[in-house]
Length: 155
Image (cartoon, rainbow, N blue to C red; front, side, top):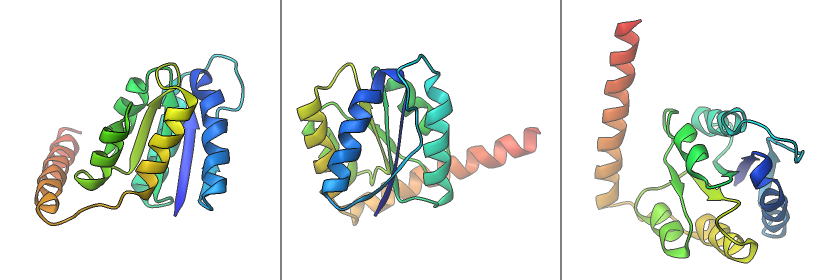
């Protein structure tokens, strides 16, 4: 599995912890930045990771900003992205089991390091359950495709 990770300045410390964790789990991790504590705009880094997942260049992504809200909003603008903001183990597990989430958003100012690492472990190790959930994901994909067609006709 290849996971991309990106953050803004508020998520930098947690991002570095998660990169170490993923390495320990023998998961290839691509760092999309930021790598500085200087203030940056989260959409710039959310876009990089989301584009890579959306295009199939990487399998999954992890995005971290102050609350995780902004990153999840950015990510869910991209086709084929199912980003989930998770602040606890249950939502991390369910985001994979039922929603096949391919991007995990975390709040660097919300979730402590220990809990964040457990959330990531749960998220990377939980498979998609499939079956009845495939029907629901197909409906989401149909909505997405319809909206893309609508937007292309407007142009």
